[in-house]
Image 1 (tube, helix red, strand yellow):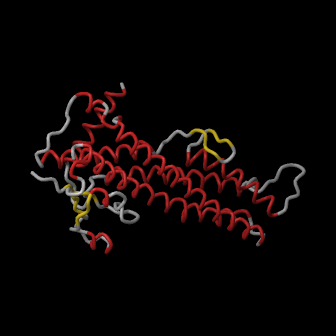
Image 2: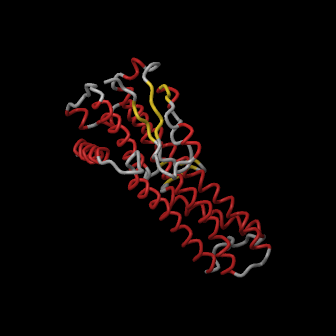
Image 3: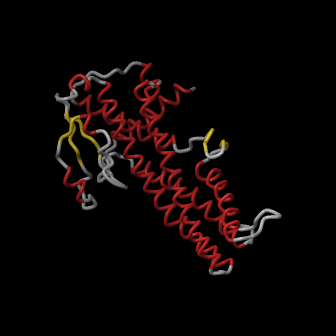
Length: 289
């Protein structure tokens, strides 16, 4: 079943790679949107729960016997918030203190799909250049299970989770500041609820959507480079170069435009794309025909 699933994903992604889309060099517009919406839904769930808890008067309720100082109330709120992040955004069912001991890896499907599209884009470019590709059943039944790809994917998915966790941490710090301000000002519960919803939107949702869109581009880039190396590019690594291309439309930023047309060795290319948040650039192989 795993091999069949891999094959179907491969065929679907290959059709996507072959389908040109104006203004979308990586052909991941749909995938980027899906990932961003998935992130947004999770932060919105926390925002909704936060509003209900604050307006219901439970957000700052301390344990029996604890003096309800502002610090104690804020601490109680942050303990509840940490549980919300784990349940709704990070999807972490278990922790050992602050250490995550297990996670359901909901982001992996998006990162894997993006990486596979990068792999297939490299294969298409190499095929057009006359390179003989491995097309056996074993490869097409488990392309991403190959050690070189499995390692690259593991690094990408681990980084994606760490980046998302960093966003929840940043949102928590913003919420702590707003909670202290609201409690010191003795704001009414509806006003306090509105105050606390803002950081979830301005920090959590906004940064989360950028993370999703940028993460797709990063995975595509790594997939392209890794598959190119696997098919002999490593033998001429110092000579085989890659040209940096952009979407070629008015939305390309100055940093991307300045790099357009420049060439990079494969070693130097690692980590260059994405250039910035929401970057839409890709690598084009300069393989000899």
